[in-house]
Length: 122
Image (cartoon, rainbow, N blue to C red):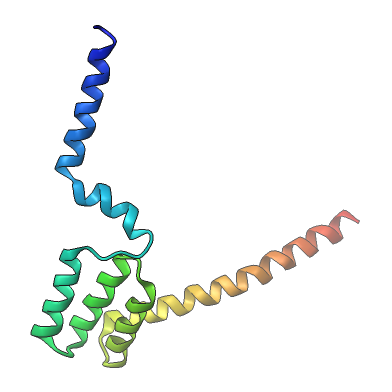
């Protein structure tokens, strides 16, 4: 009976945790695959209906898609916002370009450092 009690307490603790945060428990697994919750979908629909083509709404929609792991849709909306002149969207686009440039240079820098290390060893 003593060994069953801690196991029962652990099971109850897990159940309580899932009951208190079911969206987090399920959503974190699904978001990695590109998933929007019903709340996110409703928020996007409401923003489109109420705010139309406002750049701040487009940026917010893009961030919701980004949070859901849907990068292609996020880029589309944030690029629309940046084209309309929204400062935060312009900064995000510039940051993404900078990150892409760094990633492309990183490979070259690593190869150059490896060549340098190889020549020092000779």
